[in-house]
Length: 95
Image 1 (tube, rainbow, N blue to C red):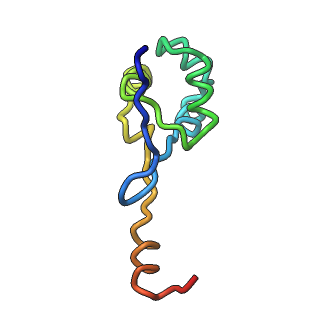
Image 2 (cartoon, rainbow, N blue to C red):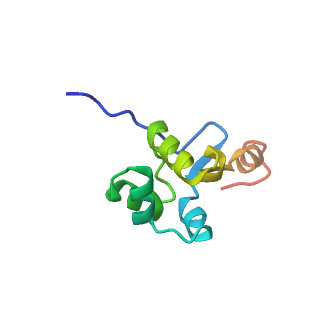
C-alpha cells in the first residue's frame, strides 16, 4: 500500500493557506468547473475550495496552475507568524 505524503500548512515562519476560492470567484468559475478543466476529482477541488487550510499536493497544484494560467503563489499564500512570536519571545507581551 502506497502512503500518501502529508503537506503541512504550518511552516517555520508562517502558516500556508490556499486562496482558491477567491481566485475562482475572480474568474467566475466553480470548483466543479475547475475539476473538469484540470482533470481533477470534484471532491478534491471542492475540498480545496471550501477549506483554506487544505494544502494541495504539488501534482494537484500544478494541474490547477496550468488550467487557470496562474502561478502557485496565486493559489497559495503565507501568513507570517514571525512578528507575534518575536514579540512574545521578547517579553513584550505576557500571557
